[in-house]
Length: 134
Image (cartoon, rainbow, N blue to C red):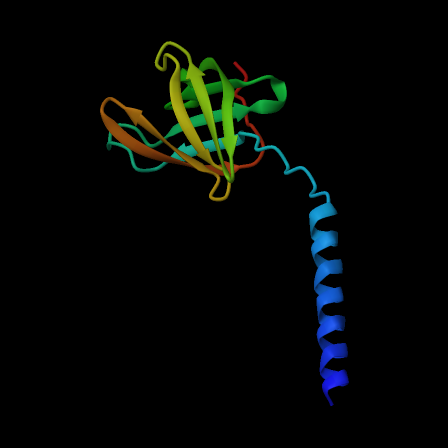
């Protein structure tokens, strides 16, 4: 009986050791980088405007368009400055935003922007950056 118990303990220790070696040597795949891409709108704005749209295109090197309607879209540029877990921090620049920092929540596909002292939540309405043509 005692020999069977010792044998069982040895087998368990061997399996635990093998499992630990496998975990130590396992190469985890690199996480997919977060990309801020698509069309984002906020519906929680003053009654004077229906929505403000951000059109973000990471694939074109960080161009974005920002405006209240298609006739008043203004071009700007943005760049990623850091990334951790499901969030990425970007700096946004145009005549409205001067090195303005936004934190993109990749899990919820959204970000917050302060406009005239009010915080607005922008959510992705399309994965395709729909840039207006004039």
